Amino acid sequence: MIQGKIVKVSGPLIIAEGMREANMFDVVRVGENRLIGEIIEMHGDRASIQVYEETAGIGCGDTVVSTGEPLSVELGPGLVTNIYDGIQRPLEVMRLKAGSNITKGIDEPALDREKKWHFVPTVAEGDAVCGGDVIGTVQETELILHKVMVPAKVSGKIGKIAEGDYTVTEPVCTVVSDDGKKTEVGLMQKWPVRVARSYAKKLPPKEPMITGQRVIDALFPLAKGGTACVPGPFGSGKTVVQHQLAKWSNVDLVVYIGCGERGNEMTDVLREFPELKDPRSGYSLMKRTVLIANTSDMPVAAREASIYTGITIAEYFRDMGYSVAVIADSSSRWAEALREMSGRLEEMPGEEGYPAYLTSRLAQFYERAGRVVCLGSDGREGTLSAIGAVSPQGGDLSEPVTQATLRIVKVFWGLESSLAYRRHFPAINWLNSYSLYQDRLAPWFEETVGPDWAHVTAEAMRILQAESELDEIVKLVGVDALSAGERLTLEVARSVREDFLQQNAFVPEDSYTSLDKQYRLLSLILYFYRKAGEAVEKGADIAGIADLPVREQIGRAKAAGEDFVAVYEDIEREIDTELAALTDVSETEER
Image 1 (cartoon, rainbow, N blue to C red):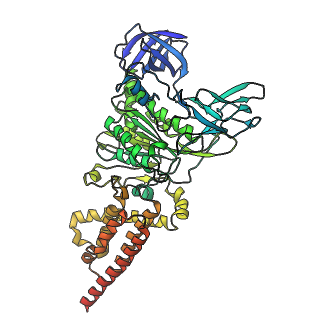
Image 2 (image 1 turned 30 degrees about the vertical axis):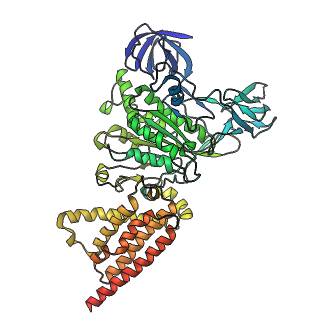
Image 3 (image 1 turned 45 degrees about the vertical axis):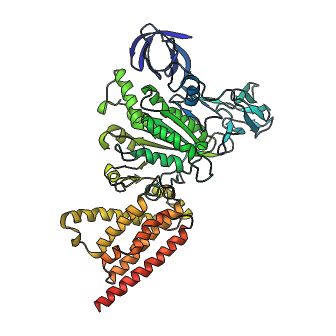
């Protein structure tokens, strides 16, 4: 046992001497209350330790004891539906034990040691297995079938295995290696959070993560196994966007990390998710969610660890062959924790005081996303998508965290306060945002949704860009200087913005939109554009076109229920009828 003495205390940073035999990233216990800490720097026999709990009352001369193990998470049945803090302590268990406030030194196991899980083996005695092979299953929730896997570095033949009820600490089978060594395999594994879990091969993404948010799915799609960031100023709707992604994305499991954001936002998540129904299964969304809550009033050092805790849990479910999404809110608060610890370590600061290694640390997080062939002989595939919110001060996207993130991720959903002030939500600026997955995903959309999906979405984007250019002219010389065709483009662009891109997260009919409905709605708006253009060429008045009753029907079309196909076909017929009548009137007036 390695034991040292504290010589300096600086907030969450503690320096202890007599630690020469300890290793970097070892977990240590600090003081009488045995606070949890981690070694982050070594100089001779002095270790710099970041403590994941409040250090008030700790002083020079107190003891520090190294456990000799890195910061690790427990992986096994019981993760789903649970709520953890940044170092995987179960908050509900701690609340029942110690009350609403987290007491010093409290340390509860992440997985319930008493609960028994029904294990069903999928292999038999004598079968050869290797690291990553599935040896059995546990029905963790109605939505998640937990696959029990052989640890990565274990291989051999199954010795003893039996169906039954087991706790996470009891062995469910024995693996006998070629040299006769026996290894007991249980329902639970441990994995160090700062080390990416192993996989056989990384593959390029091929399928979109469908979110039900029209501006994202149609214009700036994210691939399963992709990376995205959502930067935006205060009040622009970052948290609601991330809540929508967590609620409606077509992934098997969501790991939501509340990293340094306000406690009331995390409270909203905890209240909403149990009540919301998964649109695919009808069960509560909590049945496929793991929550990590490390809010702004919790220890800053644990904020730094929470990101790694979340993505390690996500990698574990990815290794089962599931599609997983990690949503981090927000990476800016995580970077601020890095900056605080770097300052206390007296490191040379980089831009705006952030450490010089900010970009590499961000890359370590986002690079753990991807579509992979999992370990094991069955060749199953899993995907892990990483979405991080960025909270730049004053909405300044040139600040270091945003710029470092943009150099790594492939999807940028740029939120803008001016859109939020106009009550346009999601406030994603369609002129600044981009997705580098569009071309790769185009074949999937064309085969699954519609053969002209790429043309429809590109045409909508062209209209929005044309509106931006025409707005500059209108500001200079007024709308009367525009031709009838250009004024029609402005009208249709307004329809694309208000009737398609704008979406109300709090209206059930509008909160989620299927891809088929998105395609038909956008096609309906473009159908009106094409037919109105023909009417303008025949002399129809643009003011009359703008005032047609069918425009209001198009605006309400996004709230159509399950029979939206029939509704949209009726609106198309109404477009033909009203434009024909308007054209006949204009021709009569000309004669």
